[in-house]
Length: 401
Image (cartoon, rainbow, N blue to C red; front, side, top):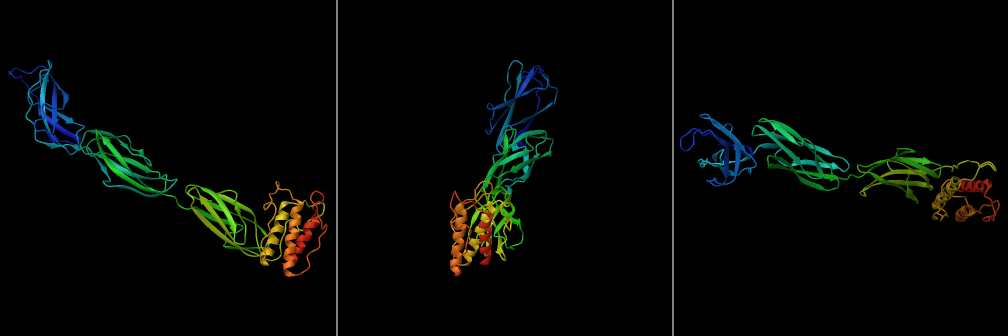
């Protein structure tokens, strides 16, 4: 007997040619190959091996591979012959102990480290399984999430030294370190490798690209639109903006975002854009905007009976007046309907009244007489807001620049 591989032992013996009485053996049916840890394995566990011929010729060698043994364990083996009538011979003298070994090898031999991998992506590592015992070795590969087998399962290795690649994939689902066994099983025996990898949820990125990608910007328009991009390995959930001089809001869109109608104040407005991902990670981009020079307004001048009054006209005046108020040490005004949405928010008399009140307070701060207005006592439901009402406010705003 010679020790084999892959939880096996390769046993061989010389076939009998005569019966116990010396007569020629003509009805040999099969052999029983007994095995066990005991020095006398017979009787005990056995394999049945069909005889190649009922009448063996002299010096015929029979070989058989015992499979499903425990790798590394020592075994003793004895053989008996059984004829067609079921009569069994005495056990052969047990052969010396031999160790059963697994018939595959796997490289690498240590832990398979996938390193750090971003959530939403994956990385692969390749194991190589090889035939170390000869013949044909077949088997399977298994593991558990977040690891998976993407190729090489099942495997079949024909001949000593034959190899096959097995690709293992790590697809992290959480910001944590994961471990699992990768089990390669052949003929009842298993070789295992430990797989380890760490999932990373990296912060998003965000950039301002409109109206400039530079860190500073100057404008005379009190209403500003910002636009840009954001990205994350899992997903951007929200982009918001905030002005250091007051005001904040949520941009439209995520990976491509836009923030409309940001009200600027006189001086340096530090605008901070914040992108947030599904895990709560954040990233920021900053643009410092200086409101300078003469205020500019949409549809300037307004033309009576030709220019319809729009939400943007009110919003621009609010931004300009708030900028003046802040410059004079006043707080921003508490506006009714703080955000006027074009097409959905109607312009009301209260909006006009508040513009006048907020501007008058600024005039009172610096001392000049407050402006005079057409239709000084406007009334809800009776007064129609006209182009001249807004043009008067624009003129008064510019007078305080």
